[in-house]
Image 1: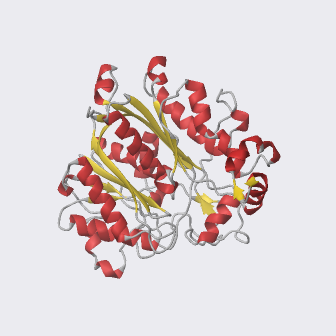
Image 2 (image 1 turned 45 degrees about the vertical axis):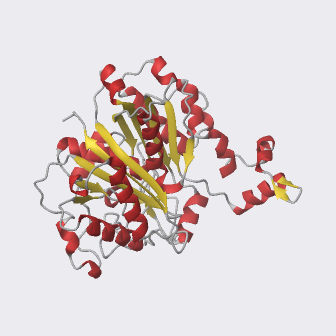
Image 3 (image 1 turned 90 degrees about the vertical axis):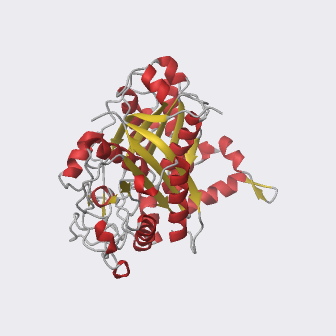
Length: 425
């Protein structure tokens, strides 16, 4: 079996702070925060009134057929993929053989819509969802089901004639890194030379945001809260997530293809893994889950733990999730020096996009040999006895050559990837 070396040759993102990776890095380096008050959600109806909005994002000038039926999630993802292609020269022939992997969040369907679906699809005491195809016109254009046939894959494939073997992957918060892993495996095996990996997230439709508020994961806020003091990854003051919208895209290639076409190699992918370890509840993440996933990724990457220089952590400021991940990192690395970084304290939690954004930031971090400190961190829970301080916001003279990016979410899902710095400084 062929075993290609897989590299990343293009990156792009849209966030509440910037629409370009380098501009985003500069904003983060200045300590700027992409979280603000959500004007359309009042605290009387929603427990949280803050989030990250890409307010400068404008899709009006994008010339593409069908944009009038795209929702904001479609627009964000389409834009990121187009920018990723524009950043590097690709021929039409290469695009025709390019696989497409989209890792997006599950669509939450409201009760009324579900009742309509059941009514339309009920057949012989069973629910036959295949009947939806002929009944879509009977449903409201603004509900979750209507969005299914307008996934960004349709627009991206149509515009660029990309019709590879890749699937659209829906797997909650880890689907961004899961899509990267699937693309990596296909290129590594020699099935394709190139693939685009992208993810998009917009949690700010009224029903979606209310659902998030009701689950207890989101932080409860008041109008007088300071937007800069809401997210506390790993810190003992962590008490809930702040959600944000965004999108990101990566282009993966075999090293042979990248060099043949004269493209810059931004990073090498050493390996990845994705696992499900069901916890006590649907919302539980466990020490076992993080440990098994991280160790699996290190094994798949064929590297030792001491070779990891920086970890871009999942920690979204939800206490049990943060503590489980931190405990595993301290157990695995023990006395080995590793730097723990995190982007959520600046950007909020962008669901499945977070993992890809952290890949982009880790690439810049390695190529600049600088790490991103964790904002709003003072000390972790008392049970850690201050041991975390040698890993978080510490002084280190290590060269940042390899990074580990972790992603996890509801359903007991875990995914991580190891990256190695490229040849761009």
